[in-house]
Length: 389
Image (cartoon, helix red, strand yellow):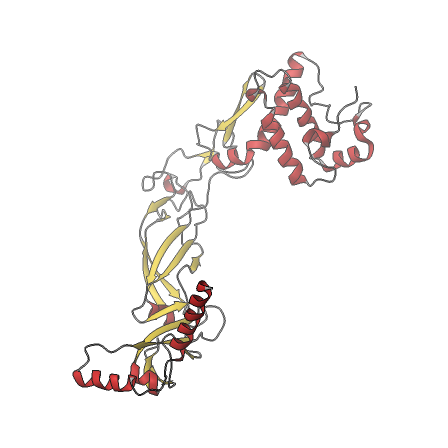
């Protein structure tokens, strides 16, 4: 019976990338894993087939030979996937081949996860690990965001132990290799057909042990301590701006590099100005007479100054006047945004008897001075006429 095509076994097309092949293999391996298919007698053979296929297609040289010659590339004693793979005979030798192959699958599927929990990749030094990153939330006023600020902050965290210089050992002595895992950080145990890998219980995955832990840090190589830092906040920051201070996070474990400190900016609302990126908006009320006749008003700017703004005659409520370069500074680059003055025409209240008389005289003068009102009610009349029709 002819053997199935390796690409067909994994469910990928010829020319598939390494990532696509690996992804397909993981999916198939999980689908036909013997432990998941105890009631399916075909699962183990399927599992062997897809492992055989992946063993060839994950190797560039084997894959090239297979693409050119097919299964014939590994026949006649060639060192193909059958050598040391699933083609071995039954009995102890066959079981050993299966266990070895499954160990490779186990590494492919879970190697990264186990490596991370064991303290790092196999063969890498386990004595040191990078410290955690820290986050600090800093609130600023809009004026501080406009001008920039030199802020002093207190950061709780861990620092390198001075007593042992971060080694975790008494007197600064170097840790020794763990005798249980020989520095690997993990141990393997044979369970029937399978090889199970676990974190080393002696060193907890670090690969090294400390015979005489430092009394000040209990072997961690770092101690808890608050630190005071001076941080330069540039002008133009806004809510959500993130400032990274490299190496100012948690101290590393047993002499490892420190993490980073991330400062997240939150800009408080302002009583007068509203912000939209680099632009500022300020709503200023104007009297009815000023709006009708025109005039000037004095507008504030965020830098503490003031500027004269001309109000055109007949201006309507909601009209925006643009003041170039009076907004927020650019965080990256140069220049400033704009300041928009929004005029809000204010209706007078608490009128005197004489004021009311003057307004009635104005209303009865006969001239139509409300073009928007006329336009609106003209459209309303057209709408009503259409409903009647």
